[in-house]
Length: 64
Image 1 (spheres, rainbow, N blue to C red):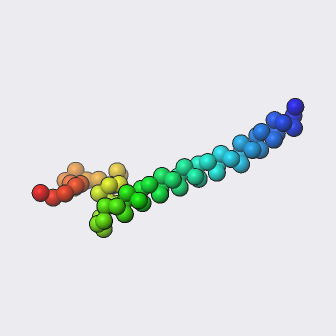
Image 2: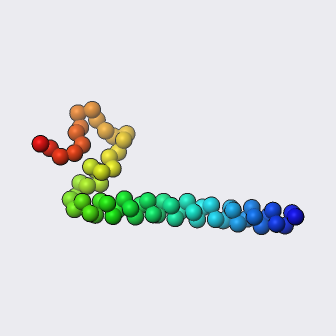
Image 3: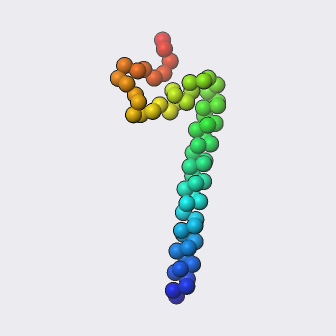
């Protein structure tokens, strides 16, 4: 009984970081693909702005 619990805990301890790594990798891949599809240099700033650096007079998006 104790050995099975230790095995389950070991598998969980090893698999959890791997799952998190894969999820972040997939999210990063989707983000990069979306930025590349836009086709302009500032696409990353427009699509994914820094929330802490946003100023009140700074306007995101196309200039009309």
